[in-house]
Length: 237
Image (cartoon, rainbow, N blue to C red; front, top):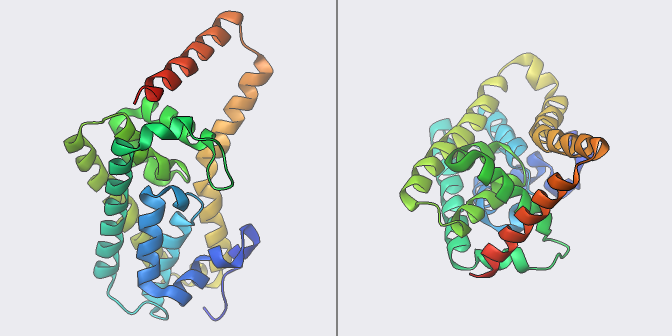
C-alpha cells in the first residue's frame, strides 16, 4: 500500500482509515474505537472500515508491527470499555438527551433511532448495534437510560465487543493476504463502508414506503401517543 486509500471520496481525508492509522498508529485506532463505542462525539467515526483496514495493515506490517492477537485484544478491550462508559453516561445524565436541542454534532433523531432499535431487539441490540453505524454509538447510552440490568449489559457488551472488534479485524487480516484484495483495496474499503450503511438505508426505505402508503387516523394517534409517552418517561428523570 503505497498511497492512502481512495475512501476519501466518501468523506474528508482525515476520516480515511489508512490516513488515520498511518498518522496515529495503534493508539489512534484504540481511541477512535473507544469514542465511537460510547461517546456522543464519536458517531461519525469510521468504525467498520477502520477495523478492516487495521487487519489489512497488520498483515502488511507497514504501519502496524504488533502481532494480530495483541491488536485484536486491545481493540476489543477499547470497544467494551467504550460501551461501558456509554452505559454509565446513560444511567447518570442520559435522560436529558431526550430534552436536548439539536446542534451541529447532536441530532435528536439519532437518540430516538437508537431507542427504537433498543426497544425492538432488547438485550440483543447491544450486540447487533455494533454493526450499525451511528446506532452503535447511542445504543449503550440508551441502555443506561433504560436502566437495563447491568450484568446482562456486560455479558452482551463483551460478546458484541469480541464479535465486532476481533471479527472485523481478523477478516481484514486474512483477506488482506489475498492478492486480489491487496490489488483492489480501495474498492474493498469502499464496499465495507457501503455495506455498513445498508441497515440505515433499509430503515429509510421502509419509512419512505410507509409514508407513501399513508397511515390511518388510528395509526397516527398510536404513533403520537408512543412518542408522547417516551418523552414524558424520560422527562421525569
